[in-house]
Image (cartoon, rainbow, N blue to C red; front, top):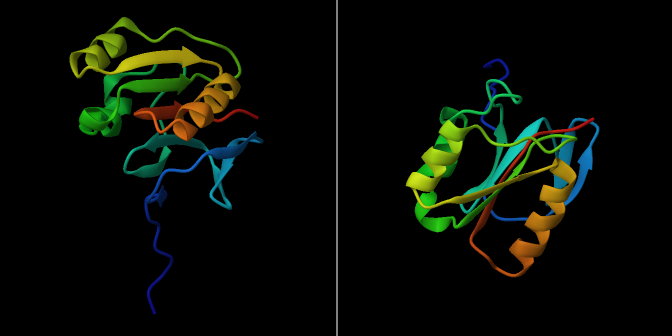
Length: 128
């Protein structure tokens, strides 16, 4: 019998975020501890190297799906933090408009845009 196998956290679909806080998120009758990326291909567990200093490498999955994303909401935690210039440029180069806001505001906006069937993606940093 094999030992415990760890797999990348992934929900293969689009779903609104039902709740956030306590270090995680609830969506599609599931919960996830930690940060998440919500992309056209699904919802993924996400661990930026430094949530206070986001880099283009943290958004590789987003950039790989750029053709299906017009708007990227970035939930930067409890407080709004501007995106670093290097990240803004990398996203602009693939024609993604990025809007940073607190995670709570980003979750609410994501749910509205998702309900409107917009080409939206989101990167949510978990909050306590």
